Length: 167
Image (cartoon, one colour):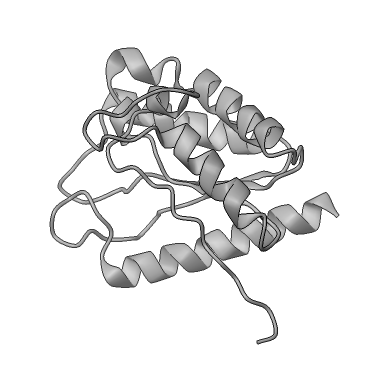
């Protein structure tokens, strides 16, 4: 009750990881995802302490060609976030893509999923949040409200584990 938690929204729906390079442009949203996220984080750091990054991305990289380079790009992204924010141990929590009945995973999505798991295991101060058992809101793309609440709880649990391991 005596702690204020702020969130720095920087999500860009449908953005492939390539648009998260410095200077990269995401034409569908008319944004520069990485540059905008860094600017927002630095502004927030003027009023508080940045405690972590919650990452839920990868559907736009689930194609055959993009998926094979996803892991390397995600590792580079995490290192770049930490360097550019001056926080080499910044927790980075990776959420699993939705696993919805009626929408089987493509081979590329399986590659992205494996990259999420491996990066969380290989990179210090990182964690993986499972989406097992969560449901969609009827569109086979977005989580239902109840599933979002559960997913948020899982993110918090993994975050606390990562922070505890780092201390």
